[in-house]
Amino acid sequence: MNVRNTDGPPERVEFSGAVYGSLLAASVVAGSAVDGTPISAGSLVVVLLCTGVVFWLAHVYAMVVSHGTHTLTWRRLRTAGRQDWPVAQASFPPAVAAAFASAFGMSDVVATWVALVVAVASQVAWAVAAAVTARSPARVVVVSAVANLVLGLAIVALKTLVAPH
Image (cartoon, rainbow, N blue to C red; front, side, top):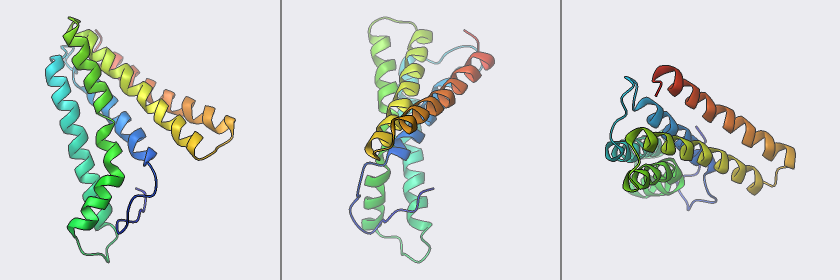
């Protein structure tokens, strides 16, 4: 976990939270059909959003209490909440993708795969954005993209092996 200042305003976008949240979203989608039967797209949307928010709350709490010497205050919780919001926010694109897939008449299986692809693509995009924002050399940007794509594809592979559709 990053050690961040919870006393003042956030200094930058927390890309690590967005990358982590996207991987979490991909994992939620992959785990949503472990018996081979996908949950409904509506249920997937709810599970994605709720899981994102619960993990965000856990991160916020852990960030504040991990400083040890600080007392738990609403101000510190709000600041930490703003800093770590990308953990929850990362669940929005795959949830919206699942909702749209369902709204366009696609099956729950297709909606699940669409959500998974969007989660992995988001993870790669956030990793690239972090590297570019840090003014990393092009090779680091490429390595960041490839490393996150490999992580995302590992989730896809696990979904395929555990619950083939």
